[in-house]
Image: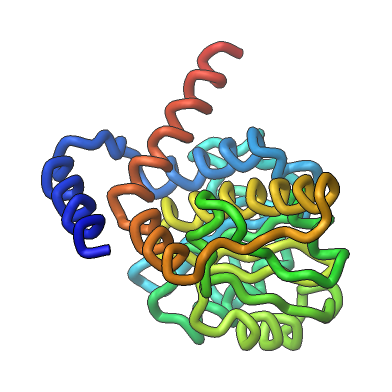
Length: 253
């Protein structure tokens, strides 16, 4: 274990200032996140939101009635916690209201993503939690809550209070009969977790369909992998990779 930690430390020391993290504005990151989510299957309906807390207490988000694959930086709007638009076109999704409850409880959270992608949605219908049964799912080790009952359409304060309480101090939550929420320290982290949770749900459902019970990974090893895969440099490099991919796709259109 100590030897592995030494190798990890050496890697991060060697790679400092050498990884490509990109150079995007906050609005560009929001737009790229939306395009990435769309490419990963998170944009089948209008039921999804991204919000980013600003230093002045306002929030960036996307306008209602625009799909994630339509969002460009100019689409991004700025709102206050009364859902009033301060800058930009359009009006926010009414479900953004429940994000504010998380922000009030979690000063460490700077970006929230909530969607209803196919595999997370399917898992949310089973009553089962997300099982950390693969290395790529270890970012959710002891870091993904499970709200076991659907509180209803999340456009009022009651749902926000319930969801924020269930999330607690974790980065993600699987929402029964609904979808998921990722609460990140930055846009990059929230997006990274959003991509990974849908893939983890897909793998869990496919493994269960093929062989029945899904076997979790070793607890101590999962904790070790969790910490490595959530290092800021890994998170930011992953976001940049996803972003370059969708930029190439947009250029080819």
